[in-house]
Image (cartoon, rainbow, N blue to C red; front, side, top):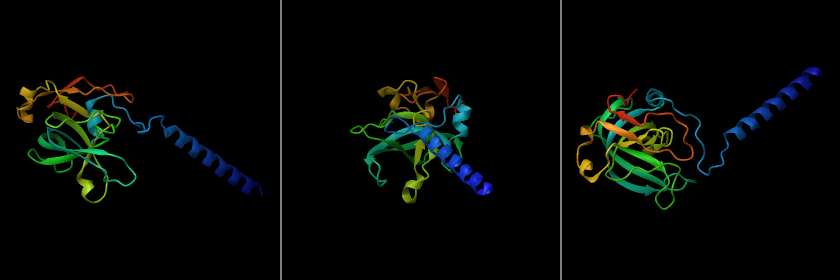
Length: 188
């Protein structure tokens, strides 16, 4: 009889702990919350599938995940891949997914068509054709833009860009990452 009471009590404690843990993951934001914050580009690189620099050549909005809203899909022409764990080479094109659209903004700053970036990316983990796409690691933690993002500089090749500036973080900011990163420093 005592064993039954102990097992039942242990089960109740486990259930209560699970509920408390799930409640701790809840966010007041409608977009969710970040679980991990980064204190260095080495930490950010370690959490990323790949690190690339490149220029956005095309964008469109898709609603391609059932039950989700808009996603902005940016095609990035890769100029360099300081960390490549996914077979991505300079000269290839990849697709970066970001939650939201200009009509329905998401929690992070969007890539801009024609903009040149240094991106820390995580494989999407999605099925089918979407499996080859990437998310920016940490929402916008892994988002750096060309240091002088001007029309004149945008015409330069992304491989000629050597310094990238951190895109300011929104409400979920909590990372302590450098304000500027060179391509040589990017992989940590």
